[in-house]
Image (cartoon, rainbow, N blue to C red; front, side):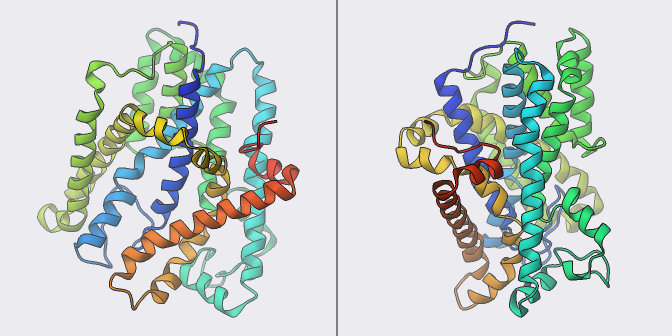
Length: 382
């Protein structure tokens, strides 16, 4: 394979831009207000009929914004492959500090925070209503847990459910030599990528990793090792075509979510799953190759660059509180013309603002603790 390319200043800014934007969009995905709120590619909304609000929320949270995680895995694979000069063991030690320690720290801190909330009647009622920690009919709150339940919740099924990404990324870094060897093989790489693609299409996970992570992390590794210019799209990846496909597949899938079962019965589920994957791919291409003007405009503004330093803090703090607060916010805004849409827009923005404020204060007061909690991300350059 060719020697990996160097990281240009613009590509570095582009990675930072999309990392930040992906975290902001993640809060809106998790702020989806229509039941059922645990979204799968084939989820059918049940609480609200087809309308502007329900269509918009579903289109965004379970359609157009779903390209983020694959993009982050691809960026991570590209960057990890870029630094092959360092011994793998040395890099894994660094990843323990940047991935595993924040995983365990935030999982533990959020458990303690929820435990304290359970001591007060109002937030305890919110938690019971949400069912965040319910394991069975007798274990509804953390106060009901035995010690082994606590260990499972802390180590493997964290209350801040978004932390799965850190765990999956560490496992991918751990097996990176095998992935690099697979994508370097002239013939074997196509077999490997086809198998990884089938795992992704079938939503099939491997032990300790998801199919989505394996495919796009491996693609990032291959793009780097093959010396592919990721800043200039080949003719078949012209972004405007993929943007149209992105919008078309997202809208078609959203319409099927509301009307498809009556028309096609259970056969709507595989059709929605196929459209979901196509929407992700189209969105990934359209955003990556079509967003350069937006990247330049945003990253030229000091306030945006300052905000982007708190990407990880937004990621770590927004959930599970965004899920817990949806129903209370809906009740508080019940007198508004459209409480669902207002909650969908205002609750994520409020949590993002709180995360940035907390991050800025902690970074100013105790940079050491901030660096420990974020794995060194977002620290001011000296």
